[in-house]
Length: 73
Image (tube, rainbow, N blue to C red; front, side, top):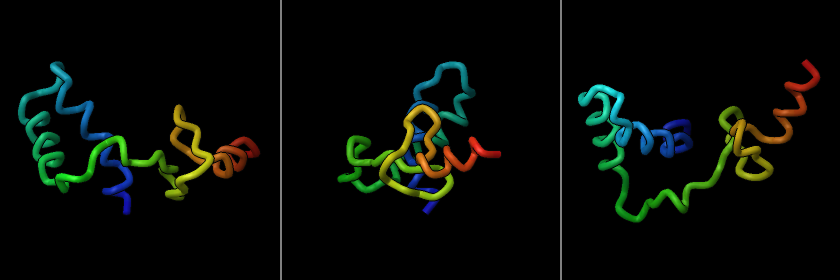
């Protein structure tokens, strides 16, 4: 589940010119192994802790429930 949840994270890495070429190639390879119909527009924002697809704060990438729990701590 976590691998599918964080697919979006590979895209910025293969375009970054500051990274070494072998690291960019590794992320480009992971993106090439995705199915042809999986576009980044179809990937939902999900909470990185719970995987919840709704009520996710995009900046923090956590759901409102986890955010409120972290607020209390």
